[in-house]
Image 1 (cartoon, rainbow, N blue to C red):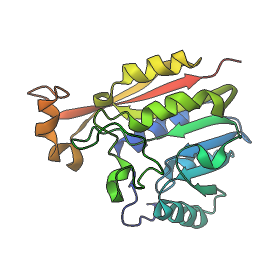
Image 2: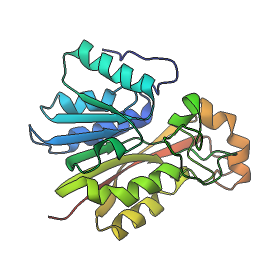
Image 3: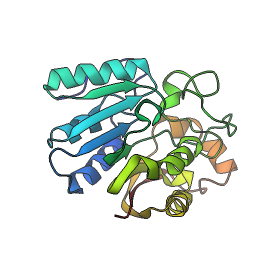
Length: 227
């Protein structure tokens, strides 16, 4: 079933599908507690819930919250959906698995700054908040790296998808520095979508794209909190 989408809500794309495959490979037992941050339409949250897990989905967009709730109802699946930025709505809770498909695209006018409510007065607005992530693409990724350890139970796992344009090596380093065991588990090259095509010249000027590159590499990073 194709999810219900509202204007401004991120539609499932190649990164969603790559992260879903990583989710299917993860040995998550029924009854495990799963958190999906930046849930968008709720596609990943629903995939996790169909495995018999207890899923909380979070998004900073009210439209995304409404879409995720509607899609759960249409699918006959139970989801707890919360509105807010990243981990703020579930502060004090811990999870067996955290899924994250955050904004990760470098943005020409995205000077490094805290996004506030991620799309509020200190961050991108409208549909752009689903992909724009500061000048280096790490605005939200770095926040996830800082907080992931505290959101995971011992033995818990974070699965996060990002572009090679936003420095996966930095994600690995920061997660490891936070006490997690981290590695890239999946890679996939995909053609440029509309966002990258629109800023292709700028990305080449920044040295983020080679002169002949016409595709983007996506990676999934798996990070585990030691028992």
